[in-house]
Image 1 (spheres, rainbow, N blue to C red):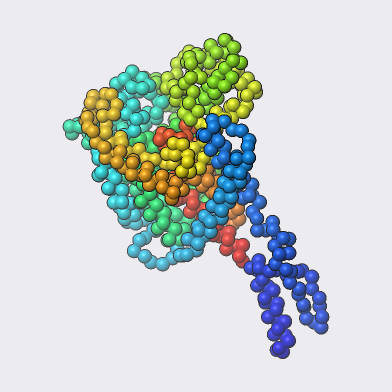
Image 2 (cartoon, one colour):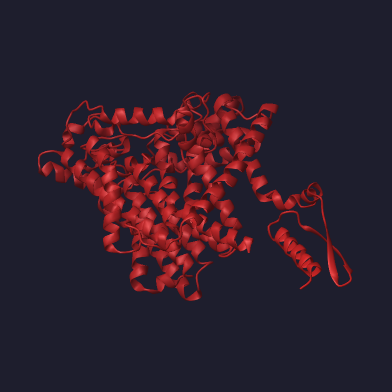
Length: 606
C-alpha cells in the first residue's frame, strides 16, 4: 500500500472517529478526485451553533424552569404569605432552575460512573446473591449498625398519634373518642401496638412490650432492606452501587430512627418496600410472575397489608393495579383484577361495613381528606370575609366551627379541620361544596395560595435565612422515649420518667442538618420533588426498556410522591411521616434508573 493510500485511510479513520465521538464532525459534502475522497472540516463555533439542540436538553430545560418556579413560589408564600409576580421571583426562579439543571447532569453522571466502575461479577466476602444465608448476613450487619439507636433510646420511641391509639386500645379517653376504637388511624396498627403493650404488662410493665416491638421491628426492617439489596443486585446493579446503598441504609440516621419507632409508618414501610419489589417483578416479567400461585398470594397479601397499615395504602394498590393492566400480558390481567378487587373488598367493604359495626369501631372522619378545601375556605374568610353572606357563614360554621378566619394557619390544617366528624357536618357537606366552588370561581388566586402554603415544604429550598428552617429540613422524632408526655400513660402500664436521651438525639441531628452541607443533604424538597423529578426525567429517557415500561416500573415511587400533595401539612415533624417512604424507596428506584441510564448511555456510545 502506497504512502498516499495510507494517508487517505488515516484521514478517513480520523473522520469516522470524530463523527462517532461528536467531536468536530465533518461537512457532509465531499469531492471525489483521482479516486480519493477529500473532506473539509467545519469550524468548531459553527458546528456548535448548528448542533446546539443536540447539546441542550430541551426536556430538562423546561423541567428545570418548572422546578425553579415552584421553589420560588414556596419561598414567596412562606416569607410573604402570598404569591405576587416580581423581578425577585424571576431572578430566583432562574437561579433555582440553573441549580436543578446542574443537579440532574451531575447526579446522572455520578450514577453512571458508579454503575460502570465495577461489574456485577467477581467474588467478594460480601455476597449479594439471593439466598437465606446471604439475607441473614446482610440483615445482621444492618441491625448491628442500628443497634446503638435501639439501646440508647430504650425502651423505645412512641409518637403522639401512637399514644392516642394506645389509649383507644385500653378504652381510655383520647383526642378522638371517649375510649372507643376509631379508624382515624388504621385499626390494624392500633391492634399491633396495643397487643405489644399488653404483652409487656404481663411481665410487669408496658415498657417491656414497647422495647420488644422496637427490637422485632428493627429485625424485620433490616431483613427487608437486605432482601432489597439482593434484588438490586439481581436487577444488574454493580457491587459498588449496592455497597453505597447499604452504607446509606446503615448510617443515614433517618432510616433507623423511622424504622424502630412505635408509629404506623414503621409497620407500613417494610411492607411498601416488599410490595414495590413485587410490583417491579411483575412489570419486568410482563405479568408472568403472577402466574405462579405462591407469587400471586404474596402480592395479594402485601396489597391487603399495605392498605390496612396506612390510609393511602389502598389508593396506591388500586393505582398500581390499573397501571399493571397496561403492561402485563393478557393471561395475567385476570390476576391483576383479582388482586385489586379482593383488596378493595376487604379494606373498603368488609372492614367498614362488617367488622367495624360488630366490634363497635368508630369510622374515621372525612376531615382528613377534605383538609385542602377547608384550608382554602378559611383563607377565603380571612381575606374576603366581607363577601360571604350570613347564610353561607352559617353553613361554613356548621362544618368548621366559629371564628374560622382567626384559627387559620397557612401551614397546618389542624386548627381549621379539627379532629372530630359528626352527622351535622355530614349533612352540611352538600351546601358547603357549592359555597366552596363559588369561592373558587371568584378568588382562584386565594385558593392557589392556600394550597401552596400547605404544601410549600415539598418545593421550598432551605437556606441560612429561611424562617423556621427545620420545617424545610428532615428532623427526626426521638423525644417520645419519655412515655409520660400524655395523660393516662400510667393506666396502660407506662412509667413516669424524665428521660432526655431522645431529645439529645434530636438536637444533635438538627445541628448537623443546619450546617451548609446538612441543608443540602437533608433538604425536604430535595428528597421529594427534586429526586422525584430526576427519576421521572430519566425514566422518560430510557430507551432499551421503553419509556412506558420504565415509568410503570417506578410507579410506586411516583404515586407515593403524588400522595404528598394531598397532605394536611408539609412543614412539620408530622409531615415527615408522609414523606419518609420517598427516603426508604430511594435505593431501589435509583438503582432501576441507574441501570437503565447506563444501558442507554452504552447504546448511545455505540
